[in-house]
Image (tube, one colour):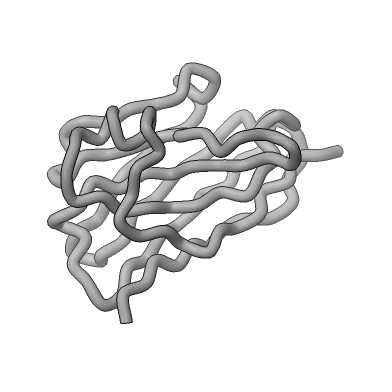
Length: 126
């Protein structure tokens, strides 16, 4: 069964950090661009960060640049999103996704994916 499973979400105070993980099972992540998306209540889903197959090309939403870092460990079939200096407006359900074609930048902008995870809740609040 092809699956993406996110973990690492939770409740954190403003200014705090979290690291999200996205683990793949049933397929090899090497062949896919991977993206992190988020959806807050009442808002549309948006592409937060995407990374190319090799990890050499990354894309970030303007509002998270300098605070979030995406990385991948293909040997572990896992992609990470390190989130620092978290703000209340970062509160959302975060999803990881995999796409085998198009660039990582377009994956984030278009919200296109072949596979989606079930999501993990991130809440930033004092």
